Amino acid sequence: MTDRTVDVEPEADKATPDGFRSMMSGFPSGVGVVTSTGHDGAPRGMTCSSVSSVSLDPPTLLVCLRHGSPTLEAILERGTFAVNLLHEGAQEVAKLFASGNPERFRMTPWEQATDAGGPHLVDDAHTIADCDVVMTHRTGDHVTVFGEARLITRRHAVAPLLYGLREFRAWSRI
Image 1: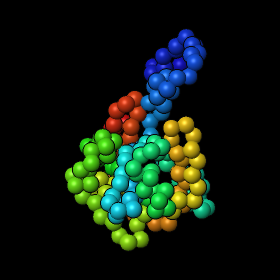
Image 2: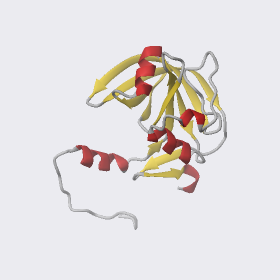
Image 3: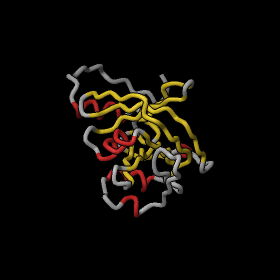
Image 4: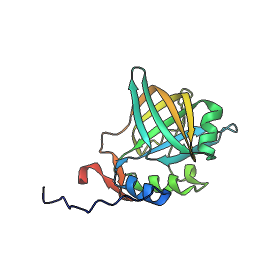
């Protein structure tokens, strides 16, 4: 046992949404903003910490998005999306895109090239993957979207932003 380990009497409880949320908060992850554009051409985006690699060949990742979100709707309509992996200085942008503020794209710089899967957050993402939807799967209140990465853009050589225990932290401060 190390100095950081604290033994806890094992206690099993029925899994509930609150208990599950609490458990998963103890599993830190990187933070991304998933973006696409709606049928009206307007940008859509939301903060997402449920991002994972799936396959190297072909390069495929997954994101889990709330069923009914405008961002998910745009992704399913368009068939493409971008995953903007946020750097350690982008905590406020992570909060902004988690808030649902309808003005969020007016409050942070972004651009979208014609071949992009969705808007790129030019100041706040260290790396961006532009993806084509290859499969979706609904489970409960979320939809898992599998995307094959076709473009990867590295914008800033800085440490990533992490989220765990309901707090943001910079990789370099861990």
